[in-house]
Image (cartoon, rainbow, N blue to C red; front, side, top):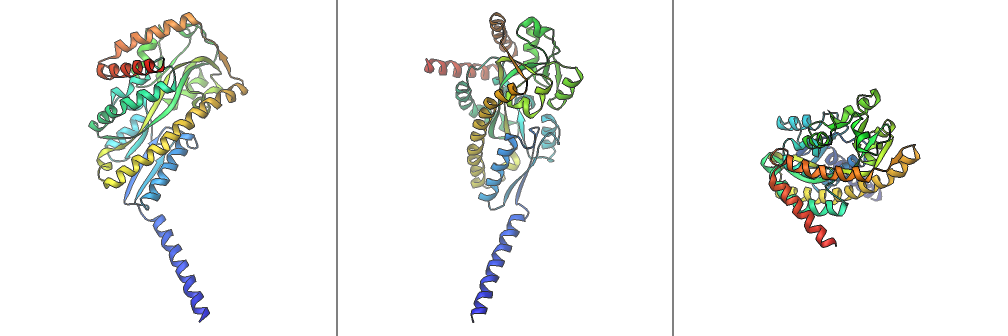
Length: 339
């Protein structure tokens, strides 16, 4: 009798384990294939995998994400093209990459626009509803904002003055009209390249000056060839997790809400992680022979003024006049409150 009872218990345990295992490996009802240029193992891909895992658990395996990191599906523009034909269903995009689709998303990339992350957070909160609508019109669902952080000018020799910058072979992100226009306003002729081509171009001497966050320069190994950092934030770099809207709206409403709530949790933490990583990376870079260079104050003021000139030039072309006015209104509003 005891033997039978024991056998029954073992059978139940085995059956439950088998059931759980089969559910875990069952084909999901809704599969989203996502690609990004973020390197595998970086804080960006780690946090995305945490998000994807929680979504899978909450949906009991019905919603799954398969991520293709490190640019193996191509750059942002290639990822978007593959979304258009259904080969991919979403991407972790940079501002530069997706700005050609939704121009207004570029506006926060203006050089010297922000003075602090508090300003960044306030403006993003204010602009998100408008940006979500703009993405929606292009068949994209804005799931979360992502962040690279404040970026700095990095070169293979010290650059403390505007005249020194003009002598360098300067990179600009391919497909970013704002950085091109701004650098040209400064008297610099930039060389546009995709992010995957930057390290090789630094190694060959095709370019000598680049722009990245502290953490980004380590992850992408740019600091090994650009080991002088001009110690003032040049601009703010960011991105977005976007899904194909047609596929997203086919999800039950409860799953749509759950995905966005889970994304808010994980990607808010990602922004905190990114800022901490950038802060910690300063010492790591200095410990590895990187030199911080103090910029000339007078030239710095000229560069600030040229940013305003570029903003006027770009309205109606790179981004709308309306989004720029709303951005500056939010900035002014925050700065008045902050006094």
